[in-house]
Image (cartoon, rainbow, N blue to C red; front, side, top):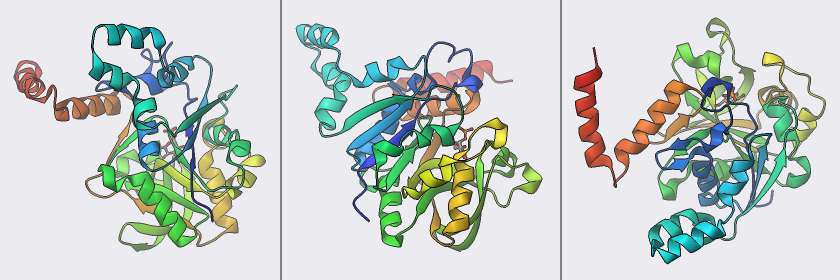
Amino acid sequence: MGKITRAVIPAAGLGTRLLPATKSQPKEMIPVGNKPVIQYVVEEAAEAGIKQILIITGSKKRSIEDHFDSDNELNTLLMEKNQKELHAQINFMEIKYEEVQIFYTRQKKPLGLGHAIYLARDFIGDEDFVVLLGDTIILSEQDNNYVKRLMNFHEEKKAVATIGVEKVAPSEVERYGIIEPEKIGGLSCIIKNVVEKPKKELAPSNYAINGRYVFNKKIFDELKNLKSGYGGEIQLTDAVQGLINKERGKIWGLSLKKDELRYDIGNFLSYSCAFFDFCIRNDEIKTEFQKHVKEALKKFSN
Ligand code: G1P
């Protein structure tokens, strides 16, 4: 197994759960604090040592490309005004992650996450690779990057797939891919089965797939002829089940640690919570922001 250097970030979803905000802008470009969601995701991959990233976009997603490009007009303006810090912030790719290349391809029809990942097959070739969902942020300490942990674990176990999981409330299982774990040991387990968005009473556990995966290229064989599943879409979770059926014992789950936080920017409530958490911890604004929150709670809560 070679070193993992490539990642795929699917960002083609229509963002219907965040309408009207996402009518003409990608949900991945919605700001959380002072950065768009997808910048956190790209930084997470880059911090894990990923060198080539394929972002799967779709129509109306062009602003994602612009965000990772350099803007010469803005650069000149900021330098003229001596705003060096801002200049450095908008040139984060060139300054911090110079060796990371970003590629793009479009999913032409909204056929599902599994279909989007299948578009990456030629880009990936024979290497194992990482998938980071473009609408999920995972915060971990810099020297303890969660994706890096997934990659290390995957290599150590010689796994065929290693899937990020997290315990969720029973009322939330219907929103996620849910695993049936066996041999739970500390943060890891072997995955026995997976099911996409099960009804609460049919869920095999409350361990949800959290939006971070490491795969062997065999996942593409499963995706190749996959029929549509939940919601009429081609589901990555169904391809994982196919892998499990053929490679029993080699599909692992790895949980987040207690201090690692996942933000799903998929709906209005989870988005609002994420925005709040990023502001309340931001060094630049936190004193004033916390003061505002206290006052707002007094004023608006009933
Ligand atoms: C997708 C996956 C699901 C996973 C979830 C994590 O669902 O299909 O298995 O648990 O992401 O956020 P989506 O949120 O795109 O409906």
